[in-house]
Image (spheres, rainbow, N blue to C red):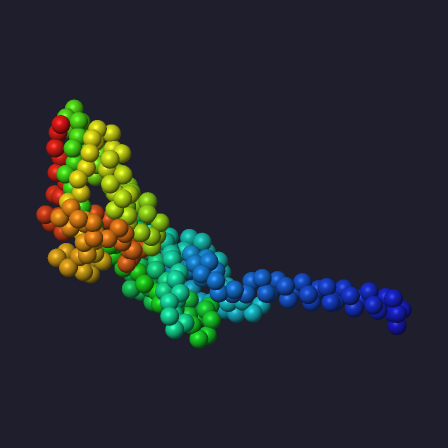
Length: 243
């Protein structure tokens, strides 16, 4: 039989081993913060040919095989709503685009599996919002050959740089246009925004007939591009006036 001191030492070592295992398990368990959910969504794996199955390993739901090449989500926002609902907006690729129906279904199953009982997770992935910008742009005449393309590029760069699920700001758009080399001034006549499924005519005005209606637009899909409706694209709606 071990001595009293030896027995105490062995017990302490066993306790330390058990405590380390418990702390490791707890550290890997879901804290269920928005940041944790977002991190897990970015680690979602999808294959069109091989099902990616989640299993409980050491009390932690995880993939049996980690394959980073199967991680398709590049954009994600997580927001809590009422009645224990959590809305998860996602997109894939760069520039962003919506997940396919099968990919959304797989992600919904994944987040339901690793999430907390009693919380409803709603995964959304849709085509980009659209923005119509009708503006008069006054510029130095010597820039006539490049002014249109440079202004459109500046607007598109601004839109693509908005944080995912962020806000479009009228004031930012004006600053961006004014900042293009050769631009003297800009008068924004109309700005209309919409979710992709909303017809152009039903879009929401931020500026109407030179009057400010709303300062910002919270993106529905999480990202936004210039209007794509024929006759209302950035190429159609920006008027350039040499001075």
